[in-house]
Figure (cartoon, rainbow, N blue to C red):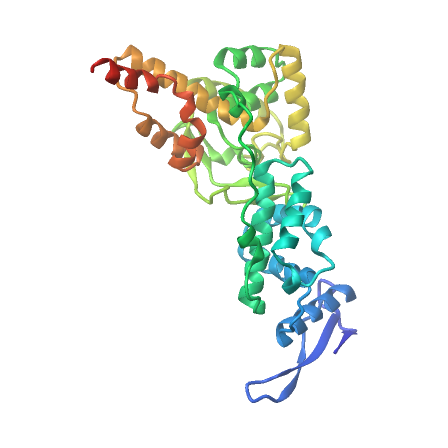
Length: 378
């Protein structure tokens, strides 16, 4: 068992490989030569993984199993999702378990880790993201390394006391139509006026807006094609991938948004190197998150409106449509059909109906009026 350097490098510089022996189906030892790797360290790590799988030893290093788990995840899941998982693992899981063998980790050890993480003041949603990562590593060990049970599953998810009183406005933060108009009225740059108007009137996710190019805008049909997202949570500087749930959708433009977007489009066409492959916002290169946040904070400060996050523009869009739906229904003496509303909105927002209802149902205050009417008829 050893690592060697091949003098004949591959075109991308790979020259290190390992050579070991493994038994064939007849029990005869035969030499196995690995593919080539860029660094000696990488070849050594892959050799350790190979031996671990080959011999299936009683003691399994947690680090080696976790490394093998992430290697498989990168081959079957979106890179941005695995990249996020791996960062969380490196910061909150690996430091606690790195010196342990996975088969020696029991319920007591898992509970100690959970207690340490809870004391860090992390949000319950993030803590349970850590739980899922750790659970999947142990599931992977059961499937591939013969681990007998999963102590993480036995311990269960992180729990949180629900003693704090949370007001509805604190559950979802958004700006009203009047507040948005006050905010956008102070923006003196056509790019940023269009950008924030686009967010408010479409409810699209930040990465989806960053990934848009002019080929995705259909002015004839008043449609925006949403079939990709941009992420910087990868090993590369950025990457264009499928949408969050891998579902494509089309968003209809309102007249207000279309007018603003056409004005902006005509401005962009004055650039001599313009083409429709340009990012809608940013031109030849997408507009980065740090720039977006800097201008957002600037214009909120000038407008005097309490700032919201970019994601909360998405909440603001739904809130706007809920208010208009209630208003229109009352004016036309129509019944407020929340099921129909969320069915329409789920497609526009790229969410399931269930998620839409759980997230936004409390914004329908008039739903109680119908219940009271039933009681008053008794």
